[in-house]
Length: 325
Ligand code: FO1
Image (cartoon, rainbow, N blue to C red; front, side, top):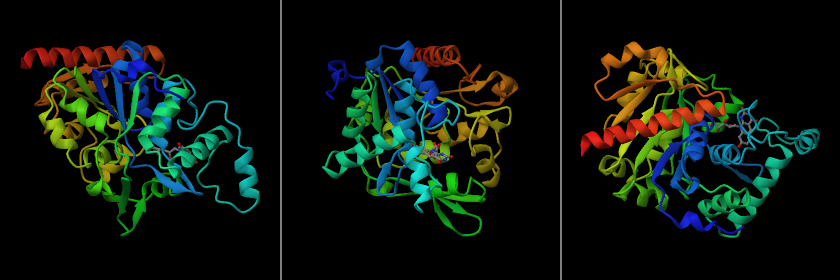
């Protein structure tokens, strides 16, 4: 499990990503760039410890997606998964609200073994990606624990997976906090990429700003580094036609009193963003946006959609970079 030699090269495109939606665009970028040119800094706010194992859902979703092993029906885990472990575990009284497939369990067992031996999460991730033949840089945003907590209207503080899986996003959210973020350090690759004057672009994937991108931005120094970054920074809005493509974002925006609109996404990232891509269904919104806005098809179903959007986003970033020079 050695690191491919080209991964010692500096990436030219940095993507910040959560799980499913971010992984789709990451796959598009992976196809249109030389693989080693892509770095993906991945949310770890969804991570938690469960049945003694470190679970890293977004890292695994990005890793399985780039390896072509992702389960497209579930949106998480591995394709062609079997569930013998879970069935037995449940029969014996074990917790089954969070499901680990047999192959996925092997990933988790090996990850925990390496973490217990003192290997940081970034190193474990690099080793796994190497073993799966992935030649892009996949970085956990931090090696230290950052944990998203959902503050509910009924005054509870729910760890993300309890909110998302166990309670199926039903509780009303009134805010979020990011346990451990203040004492965490950003991944060194992420710091170096953002300071690199030859970086081509930073892409904020169409991920949930509150629970996928904010846990990255709350890591000390990250938001400042984005503000200081010389490359064009482009976000792809995860809101399409007044709804989120997947997940609880629309519900969250409503509960927090914000419009379910790409306008809210722009406002969220305004201090560091160079431009935003919104879906063609929302074309009329473009005229009201006070930052360069590109209208394009953003819904990614097949690989062609993903590579087309990746090319569109990169061209837009290049155009914005040219304008600012
Ligand atoms: N999501 C579910 O809705 N139910 C599950 O049982 C579940 C298990 C699971 C196991 C490993 C893994 O990497 C992800 C898993 N997810 C599951 C997905 C995960 O909770 C969320 O999709 C992400 O955290 C949101 O990005």
